[in-house]
Image 1 (tube, rainbow, N blue to C red):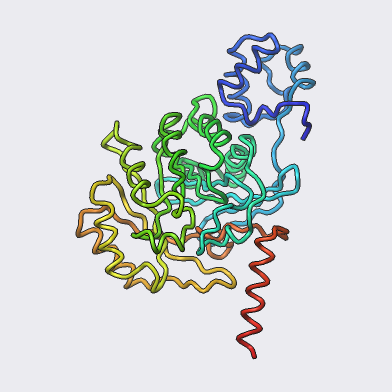
Image 2: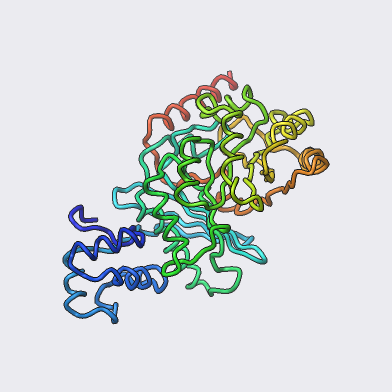
Length: 372
């Protein structure tokens, strides 16, 4: 990727108009480019036939449209697709498509690795490399739309929903995430409804308020614990932004639209956060928050001590919440056979971060200790 040329893939309508005004063109050219790049999927300026030839030639010298390389593609038995994308600097990210009867959900990444190191998440064990650019974020949707079209483009292979629940913490990358969200919602690009685009956060409270001001897409919170003591261990960010402050931000997020609610994600860990007292604590915690619960069966990964709660325990937990009038669903685990399920988004590439190496060393010491 050339540092001298802007990558038009990552420009939302406002930035695209500014680009064309800078080169002496009318702002409406931005709408044309957005449609060519995102709606039609054309990345070669010479093929953009409603642009004059002089403008096409000029764009070739002034800008570029570059995409990551798809180095791995796999379809699971349940219809889930996973792509591994190599970025310009050799880093890799993962994107997962999950088809259902009435929708198709794309799970995209916002960072290379993750800085938060949640105790139960395999992605956190990779460590953190860098934020993704807007172009790298939106490229995941661009690639998925084209790849699914190649695979038949049937109703269950159309992206209707996007969730930012892949690698990374989106709200630690707001300057690049928000323009990508704008492109997802733009009718000249992907035209998704704001109710069908979800940003998931572990609780970066200042950025929750910022997101609300810039674009009120759906919000999901990686909760995973009903009290500060347990959440401090599972989600270390809680030490900086405790539950009382997080619940206040959640109450405020949709205060102007009472029909909408925040989704609380809660991974079910055997003997850790899945007992009846935990469910009752959740009922109290959410008593004045308009929220719906999404219980997520834990997906084990190598060297973890955590285990998945059994179905009966999850059902009992769900029943307690439902009895308290908290809308509660249990996420169906998808893509296990291609390591695509929630919590398993770790690229099949060698990771050289110090945290990952420490993690492997600690795991090796544990194995050696158990064998003597």
